[in-house]
Figure 1 (cartoon, rainbow, N blue to C red):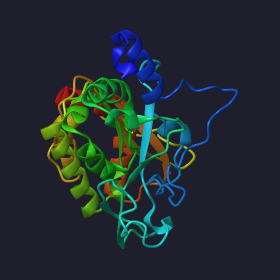
Figure 2 (cartoon, rainbow, N blue to C red):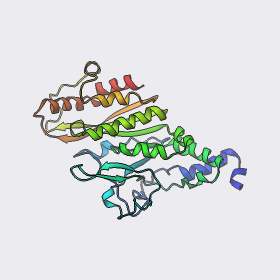
Figure 3 (cartoon, one colour):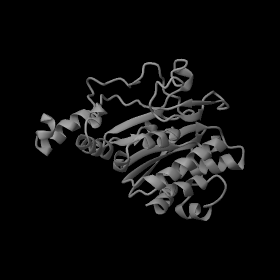
Length: 288
């Protein structure tokens, strides 16, 4: 192949144009992509959050690729059952009240044109291209943590080993259900067993009530979280602590919430105010 005959530096430069997202052009932005015209992305689990707070901060050296679950209620009838998608399926709660389970899978929504098919041409291009694609990009899932295990499981062992940066969001604690906790635990177990990350971007949905927001609300310190570790509702932190990563960033994904009228909601509001302070210090002490 003429491509394989080129010097390694030139070949890698060519591969980078094919498998890495192009820098955003503010004068000619690309629209978000649904790579299959029959699909639509499942809605996020935020309630009334600030849209900008959910976005992973850009990094000049590490472009972001967004992955989301496909909304199974907007897939053409029979397409999943007919094997139209080659990706591993997963089961999610899909209706408004999250009472109905349906099968779906993940797709990319980033506004970038990638050509990863070149990785399938030969072993050498697979290894060189996979190291570029999976070793450079940040793979962001937002609250769609159900997509993480199918996506990583579909990669070849070499490609999965190259994944170094993940971004995800923990759903709002008062709105979690048992199946949410089970999905989170399974995801953490898989990452702890299979992955060696350089960076984990952990967003946490935080509630800010009323017009006064967090005014007058006590902010919890790292020591407070250490004292209450193991209490009901905080098991997810201990599960995330098993993920092996060299660095972790904790961000608050702020949404409006009702004025607290119970101890549980009052605690969540205090927790929310502390996400990027004492809680972030606590998490970094556990994970890193």
